[in-house]
Structures are given as C-alpha cells and as structure tokens.
Image (cartoon, rainbow, N blue to C red; front, top):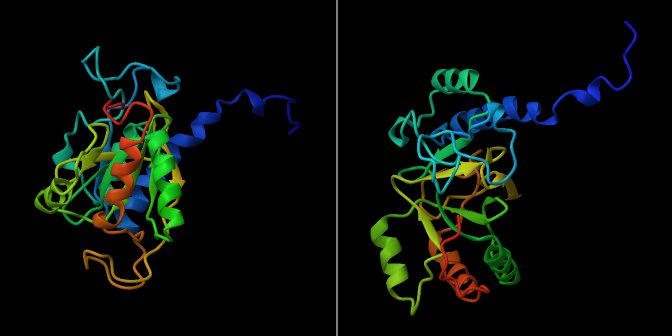
Length: 239
C-alpha cells in the first residue's frame, strides 16, 4: 500500500510514552523488586499538556499536579505484575510512582540548580552515585533504604538544614521516568546501573539486577551544602 506523505508526522509523539510507562513500571517491579503504583496524572486526556497543567485530583490548588497518589493510595504499591498491567492498561498515561522506604530505595530531592551543583561536587570527590531523577524544577538522588532515626541523627549534626530539601523515606513516594507531571517531563539525569556489590544496607546480593544505591551518609553533606549555597539560600521549598 502506498504511503501517504506526512501522515506519520501527524501522530502525537507522546503516545509512545504511554506504553513506555507500563514498561518502566514492570521493570521496577520484576527486575528491581521496587513497589510501584500509578499517580493521579493530569487533567487533560493523556496528560499531554505542558508545565503548569492542572492535576486530575479534586483539589484545584494542588501543589504537585499529577505527581501524587490518589486512587489507589500509597499503601497499594506492589510488585505484582498482574496488578501493574491492569493499572496501566486502564490508565496508560499515569505517572509511575515508587513507594520509597522499607526494602525499596529512599531518596533526597532538592532544587534543580542546587542538584547540579551537588552532583558536580560529588563527582569531584570520586563518589559513586546511584540513579538521579530530574524534573525541570527538582532533582532526586536515590539512596539505600534508611530509617527516620538514622536520618535524624545525620541531620542533627548539621548547623543548618535548608527547608528546600525533601526526604523520601518510609511511607513516601517518588515519581519515576518517563512520567509527565504538572512540572514537566520526568527523566533520568543519571540512569540506573546494575549493582555489582552489596548495597550499603546489605539488602541486595552482589551481581543483583537492581540499581546500585549509595548510602545516605555518603551524599547528605554535599546536598545540604549545595542547598544552603543556592541563590535563595535554600529556604524555599520549590516543588
């Protein structure tokens, strides 16, 4: 059959993101054993709007549009492939949310400008980093699971912890690529790489397919310093 010139160019490019979200959710659940669930998404069909688009939840003033659980709630996060396929078959444009803490990764997020400064500092120290998730406004460094008690001990020793830092631990969540939220496209600033030794938490065996994760203590100093040195002094919590 003769191809009609220009026909393919009319297809919305972002349609390819929708099956990619199911693939990403299945990789997290089956290869990495990370529990996931769908985010609420954006108000328009397919979530194809740009930054600043309204959330699909009932709150007209939602501060994290599209980027949070709604129905189901965070406790529904799972590694069950049948449930994941059902969720994203019915809602292919839904963001992929990682339920942090427990045996799953935790994370620390900070404003994008400060995140770039922190990564440069950590690279200069020769620090091995794990996956880094980026949105137009914030970067998130995934780390090995930590408890709130241990995190509290680390932060207590600091002279000042900026309010622009956010900690994603037990009971929290993080939006993963290739999701799209009201803040814009979610991407990997540092893509996951397979583990080659024991995690700092001792939770994964050598050679595990799950991405390698640094210990929170190894990176928290650089993140606090970069946030304190941000243009606004790290005092503003920007989503």
